[in-house]
Length: 450
Image (cartoon, rainbow, N blue to C red; front, side):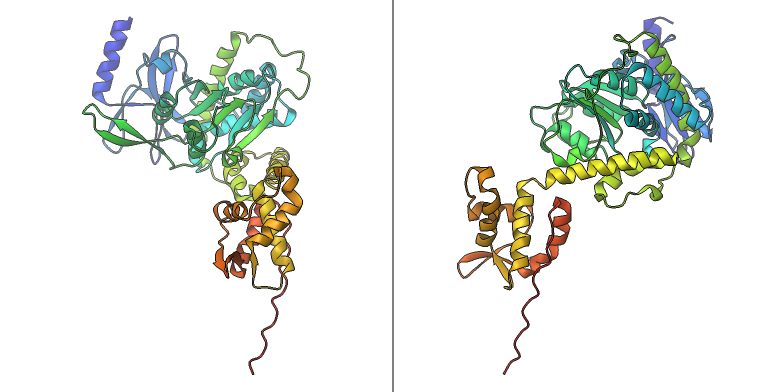
């Protein structure tokens, strides 16, 4: 079949039904596959727990007819999105995981723990839509430390990986994630502005939770503004040199620090052509794993960690639920708990933590029913004035209390004060910022009325 015939066939298929990459119904999985040699796409349909067949048209219970995306699609033809070619028996789960680990070990130098985590994350990517919350993987380090190599090796095994870079505009990323789903693999993710306002940060912030699309204004052919919701939920693996300014986003990553040890001498300098073939073979087995195991996947609440922030448990639980090796699960949990401790330590050094510590101390040492913002500022400056090049004003301290810590103040007898009723917030805030919490002094007893 020549190019004109394939194009005509794809146009005809589009007229017959809805071009589809993936679809999950109550008991059916439908997945797009691509035969690179024949340059042909098709849909794999599994209705009976792993039994499958390949079809060009699929009618589903809603009456809709699904057809495969065209093989001439730029993302497919240019291998910007990698697809399996057909399901292949995956064997046993631990065998599949070991083969993934061996593949990664051949081509990229990862720390021993991350080499255990990465195969499970690959597995998670293939069943990620069975969960409501996901973590991200990150490789962080200086140039020349193997970040890009790690992205290529891990990403080539993931579910419908889409390769992009920090230089890419966000529009094609929005549209590709919305249309194809799958795993975003992003290199050079260091952004000029990486706070919560950056578009790429919005994709990453919203992409960990199902049902949190990003709204964008789109102009239709009639030049009418028509807001569109782009689905960005899914696994993501990024490489970067530094960190994001947005601390909320930082909490979503499981991070491998690259360049912290000498490179293993057996790692090839150039990736061999065999990598693509090996990766395709593993993607085919991973597709079969999805077909067989998707409807069996359940969240394992016994994997919840004690003493960490709820956000970490929320995002990490999907990954931990897939780790049935108790030893590996314990190692991963300890690493995540240490990561939580590092985040808490960093937060304890912020200005919010310093002001909160001063406020806790003021309430703990007063016998009054309120403390003044002036007193809080005095205690803060006694410890931190040198860090900020001089004492901070009462007004500045008051803004930190109100806008960042959400501690209300009001004016009383010409000065701003914090009422004793705000003490109910202090224990939770102290835990969050890693600040020692001192119980307030007992209130003086009321004198009996005469």
